[in-house]
Length: 295
Image (cartoon, rainbow, N blue to C red; front, side):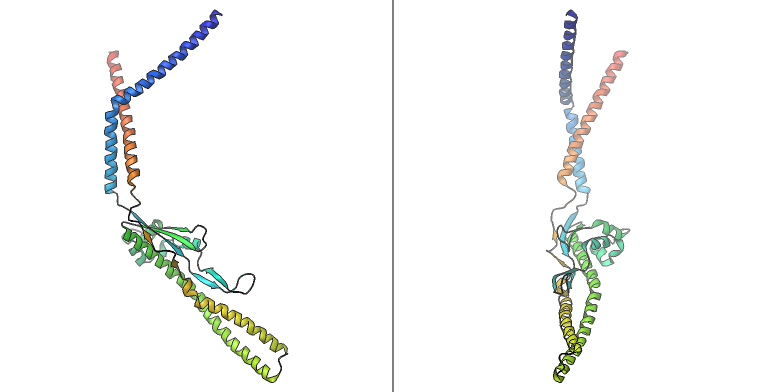
């Protein structure tokens, strides 16, 4: 029993010693902070100063944003029947446009100059990396464009130049389809005139029940439907050109550098660095005292 009591007493003493050590450690930390607060404050002020210098020397960057609707062509038929499709078909899918404008060769000199990249070593590559294009969420024919510049006006001018480039290139893609539709429309009109002339002659001769007459009548109905579809393609293409969903927006507030973030990093970094330096100085002082005591 005496041995068990001795063991319990030793365990209790060990626990009390640990508690005392923890208490002493907390006191040491508080004492250290009290002694080193000047150093910590000085380095915090230095961190703020560095942040202010960074904000002053870093060029401001502004952002312009817009949404662009892809050019479309009227779809004559859908998959199930021969009725007109009012929705149209994209001339260029958003994903393909994004891929195309990721190439440096996609940008002509006037677009590069409007965006202020003509003095860069590789202006096309620099511009391709600088702009941001993304597909519109939940919309199959819209892309969101973001451009950047040293002022809101520069960013807005760049966004407008990119939009005009997209509009021009998609109009060039669309043109062969329109020309083909016009040729087809002219051919169908000629065929329709001939078919109507044949039917009129058959009506005058009284042979309206022949196979040729019935076949020509079916051809007339087919041609009328196709002509209507082709006219829809030709006449509505001006209403389906590439266009902005809303005017280009350029904020007057710069997106970088971020003042609050820079100041917070400066303060926290200065406090941390001051804490480390104060701790290093304290340890150095202890080592000097220990060395003198050993002598």
